[in-house]
Length: 192
Image (cartoon, rainbow, N blue to C red):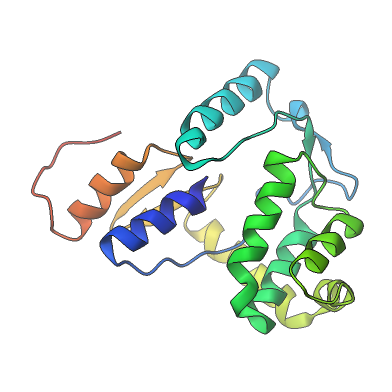
């Protein structure tokens, strides 16, 4: 959801968008765990309801599922693609998003990631390289340090000018903040 909103904002205002791939729950075991270990069922259900309402206008569907995947393998692979297959980066992120949020697949599993690579026309053997590539591990560590320094505790987190916006927010809110940051809007009201 955050990527769709940020991409729209970038197109509309001709803004560069920079993504940092981070693990929000680095303590998640390789097999994943129940999201309800972290959040009550009412919160999880409300989150999916809100995401589906917001995503509907963009054609996004969020399938409610219980699995919190270990995202480390998919993030390392994303960093590898960023470094070695930059033309495929957007397609990779879209396919990971769809696999996890729309299809309920475990993006921490090598088989799922290998299938995604194959659909993108990238040799699935790239996965082993990505998981062991020191440059990818360094980028992931640097992103984690940057996010910690900026006190990022959830995704998406947007930084627009001096403002920080956490969570999937309605597009008009992001647009208003960006317009203020660019000096295109002299309204000083708080949109949050």
